[in-house]
Length: 83
Image 1 (cartoon, rainbow, N blue to C red):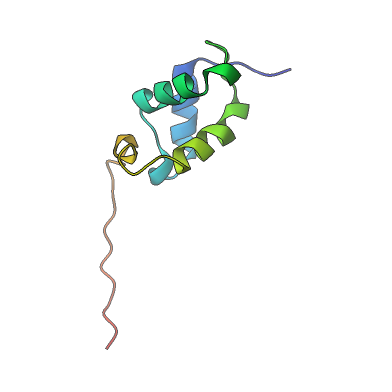
Image 2: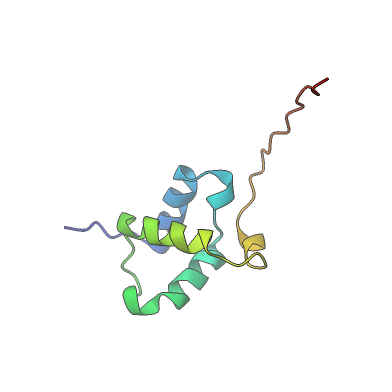
């Protein structure tokens, strides 16, 4: 049996498990839903959709990648220069 969850819960779980470069916004998830509508039912979200969603995120053209959520706690490291 497949556990279905809400779209909002799917997004929360996805962002919790994903690295910064794969975190998404609700608008991006809606774009995925509209593009993949034949394979998705309106309210049937499950953890099985995570892999297709990640594949879709990785295949996004650069102009749409600006909608990928950025982390608020970005760390900048200063690396020593090689002499």
